[in-house]
Length: 152
Image 1 (tube, rainbow, N blue to C red):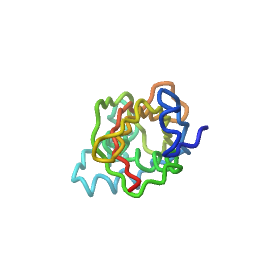
Image 2 (cartoon, rainbow, N blue to C red):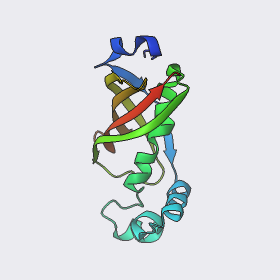
Image 3 (cartoon, helix red, strand yellow):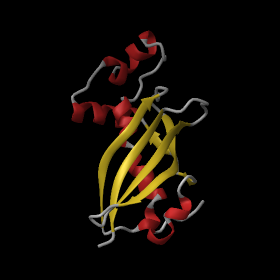
């Protein structure tokens, strides 16, 4: 797995940056996310009903909860950059491909699509994130994220 640095970004464009560690998605994390977003749909938080009535036979994580795990996994894989400042800039694409059942583990595969220097001194990184669910072929989500990084 390459270690990205400010000086070697361009040589890694188009390449896989690596795969993060596994992140657990227990029911307690789903419940906490439901509370902070006020999205308390039964398919997420009612274990008995979801087991009985859901097509997934278990509670599932909110799609945006799975999306919110990107920073955890990205920090691990982009740690070598060591910017003095970084901010989320947005997304070019986001697709939720498969639900994440409570108790599952996920991890992120990151590919660096572009590293574009800007006139204001920032560098725009465009990364493809594929969040894998342990034991499943179909990913939870695919997202092209945009982040601004600065070393000044």
